[in-house]
Structures are given as structure tokens and as C-alpha cells.
Image 1: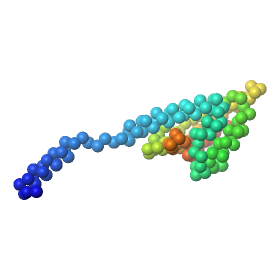
Image 2 (image 1 turned 30 degrees about the horizontal axis):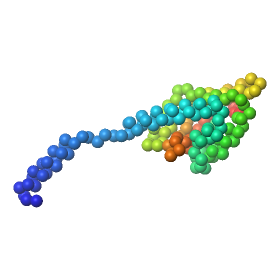
Image 3 (image 1 turned 60 degrees about the vertical axis):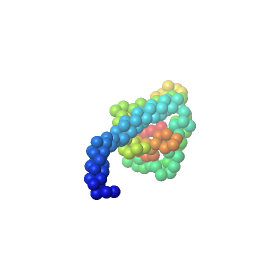
Image 4 (image 1 turned 60 degrees about the horizontal axis):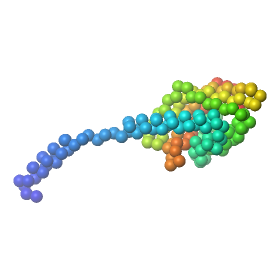
Length: 163
């Protein structure tokens, strides 16, 4: 390049750099989409819970032994084995309901979100006797090829016993 063209090339490069559009941070839009997706996932979980669909409910949980669930100050059986055991125990109840109150969904990184919510779970036996459990949940969800999966969390209950 000749010495006479070099300053023009440099000035042209600087003008292009100064006039190019600023980089757009994709995170706010991605985080908003994650909140929408997690809201739909929670609604689907509630619907499957009310339908007593144990197989569909099981699919909301990561099928690995790396995740942990803490409840009322103790770690429970890790992995989806705990979930299957609990769902099997609930099979005796013909009516199930879970509701979330004051839910907050926070995307942490792309593909990882935490849901913090209060809950009310109720079960009605065939004889009409109803059991109600209130508490709080913190649930970590990871987006995997099969959709959002629970990968850990914590629950506390205002009730002393659970079904």
C-alpha cells in the first residue's frame, strides 16, 4: 500500500467502526423468553398434577443422580427416584391439586432458571377427606433437549406431615 493511501484507509476504517451499530445484548430478550417458557412449563406441571398423570410428572425431572432436593432442613433421596416414590404414594388419592402463589421466575444463565414460589397442595381421598399442605419452593430448572427439567431445589412446609 502506498504511503499516500494509508491515511485514507485508516480514516475509512475508523469511520466504519464509529458508524456501525452498537452490539445488541441478546440476554434481555432471551431472559424474557425463558420466563415465558418457564411460566408455560409451570402451568403444564399444574395441569398434569391435577390429572394425576404420574408418568408425565416424572418427565419434568432430570433423570440423573446428580441433583439434590432439600426439604425441611434435610437432603432427601437424590434424583428422580424420590419423585417416583412420592408419586406412587399419592396414587391412593383420587383427587390432586397444586397451586402456586407469589411466583418469581429468575433466569440465571441461558438454559438455567430458578423458580421461587409459595405453594398449596391438596389431596382428596375417596371418602372425601382432604389433606392440604402449604409451603415454599425454590426449584432449579435446566433447559435440555427434552424441555425444562428440575435439577434441584428446596421445599419447606408449614405442615408437619406430608402424604
